Structures are given as structure tokens and as C-alpha cells.
Image (cartoon, rainbow, N blue to C red; front, side):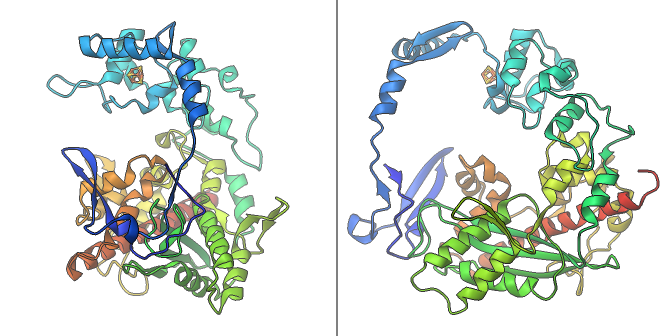
Length: 497
Ligand code: SF4
């Protein structure tokens, strides 16, 4: 039985009838009393025949140990026997070790839980603690040939050659770094100019010369769950319940200009979200920034929802025109349709023009921000004191905050300076929401908080505390984008870069 994305929920509050929770570490679903076939409306599950796939699995083979591939049934028996006899199988390291479930972050010291990953690689390759400290090819960002590298004995980044990556060693042009450049720099820190990090000043200045002030940084919080919260929504359909919006003025002044949140149980926030975003962004034609594709994807999905909604809002035409103005989408003929004020992707800017080895090549904002923090004198000077907060600058931090702080000789990740995020949301709920959704892990906390706010059995105090935490967290998301732009602009002005 699979969720049928074509079906619409015919009742409100269906999601709230199935509460995910953990009991003794195991996921459990608590079903609300009175939940029966007759009370849940249109069925959202559909039967899908998978006989073909099952036959394929049963008729296939499985690797059991290096060089031992057995028919499915024999392989299952061999694995079951090994498990019952507590026999360790010979490890078969591959790219899968990157997501090994039995992995400690560092070489385990006596008395700490064992680390299967460290045991496997030590047994197979004779590695000692100092080998692990040099990193593994598993860290290579966006590289699909890890299993091949491991098979040929290339295990550490420093052992990777240009031919392994298919990298031709060409210098970066105005278009900036390719993924190959970034992978190469993870293995060999020989970027042009040397130094702590690489910044492609010419490329950045060329790209940023087209930006118009005031610059707008936006970030959305969304939820896309299997069981809809409100009537009319489909399984996994997008719910956009919050945005944050910072601006950078031409004179360098920054302001958390606007924000919006709707977590009221049973209220579909989507149309209100687009309307509020339109109000926030239509006062000028300044460049709008997002980090990665998410904001573009969300707006396109909301556009499609509104266009097929039988009870369309009265301002539908204006809302659709606004979305089309600031997004890129695919037309019916698959051609790209680019809005006149299409949002700029800062993640792409980071990918092309900024590389810090601390990020291991990643362009996730949660990785880039700490790297910027540790290396930018601009951020140290601008945020090292109690400089951010209060009316006119922040909507949620009434008291000034010093976002640049040092602890134990290291710059603290600003996200760790927020009070324990969502202290009112239990770890169990976060885990339940994040299970199987690794691509959404970074937004998992907000998504879990939204899910919980849809359950009505919560005091106004708890509701207020979670909403406040969401607002602060999202404000920091757009402030982090501001910090990235400020750092790169300061590097663009610097004579030393
Ligand atoms: S490290 Fe983990 S994934 Fe890799 S072989 Fe060992 S148990 Fe399997």
C-alpha cells in the first residue's frame, strides 16, 4: 500500500489522528480514538502490485562477503547463520561506508561504544588512528566513484590523482569552480594564490555586478507530509508555513525587514504565505536571494496548487504573476521560463567562487557559515560585539546578540548560540520526523515543530515558546545569507584577494 499523490484528503485534521512517537527507541504510531474507515474520509492509500520486483529480488543474488555472491535465499541463510552464531563477516568496504550505521565520529577510546566503521577499515586496510585523522575518500563531495577508488586502494584524499576525478587541472574562468575543482581542492589544497581558503574574486565581482540594491535574502520553512493536515491537500503536498526576509541596503545597513508564520491548527497557510511574501518583496526591484532550489520549488508547487484549486482566491492573477516574476519554471513544452526578477541562488555563488577546506567541499549553508565565521575579519568586526538586535534591525532579538564568539579557541557555530532549539519539542518527535528524510534533515526541526503545533492539546505558553523558537531560527537562516554576502563583498573590496 502506497500513498496516492493524486487523492485529496476529504476531511480536516487527518494527520492529527496519527501521532508518531518513540517507545523504547522504536517508532510507534498512536491512533486517536474513533479513527475508523468511516471517519477518515477518502482513502489516501492505493494498492500497487510489486510481484515483478519481488520475483526479481528472489531470483537474484546478494553479496555476502568479498568475492562471495550467493543466490538470494542462500545469502539470507548465510547472513542469518552468521548472526545467530555471532560470527563477524569479512568487511566489504565501499561507498556505503559513508552512511555506515555503526560509525563513531572519531577513533573510540576504551570504555566508549565500539565503532564498526573503524573496526572494518582497520581490519581490511590495517588502518591506525592517525590514518583516520587524515580523512577518507568517503568525504569527497558529490563524487560517485568512491567504490571504485576504494577497490583500487585509493583510500585517503591525499592519494587521489587527477585521473581518478576526471579533472583536467584547468584553472577556473569567470564561470568559477566546477565540481571537479572543488573535489580536487578537498584532496589537494593547491588552489590559486594559496592561503586558508580560495575566493574567486574576479568571478564573484562579475556575477555580483548585476545585483540591484536593496538585496533581499529569503528563506522558507515548509512541511510535506504523507498524511495531509487539512482537507483538500494531497499526500506529500507542499505546506509553506513560514518565511524570513532580511535586506542589505546599498550603504551596508542590514535589517530583518519582514517575517510571516502561520501554525494555527487546521488552517491551510499556503495562499496567505504567497500573499505576505508578495507584500514583502514588491516595494522595489532589488535582487532576491535564496540558498539552493528549495524556495523556487516551493513557489512553483504553490502556483500549481492555486491554479487547480476550485476555490481560487480573488487575487489569484496577482499572486500567480508575482510567483512567475521571481522564479524559474518549466513550461508545458519543457522549455525554461525565467522570471524577470528570478531569484539568485547563493548556494551556486558559493559553489563557484568560494572554497574553504573546513566545508570539505560542501555548499550547505550550515557548513559554509562556520567556515566564513572562522576566516572572515569582516564578520569578526561586525558581529564580535553586541551589535545585532533591537528595533530597526531585528524582529525577534530584542536584546543585542554577539554572533561571532570564540570558545576553546574556536569560533562558535552561530546556530549553537541559540537557546536549545525547540526545547518544547521532544527528541523523539524530531527523530520521528527526520527518520528517512535525510535530505530534509536541516529543516527537520522546523518541520517537526510545525507538525506538533497542528496538535491542539498544547497550552498557549508552549505554543508561544515553539513559535518564538521557529521565528528566531528562521531569522538566523536569512542572517546567515546576509553574512555570506557581506563576507564575499568585503573580499571583493580587499586588495589582498
Ligand atoms: S564500515 Fe559499515 S558499511 Fe562499511 S563494511 Fe563495515 S559495517 Fe559495512
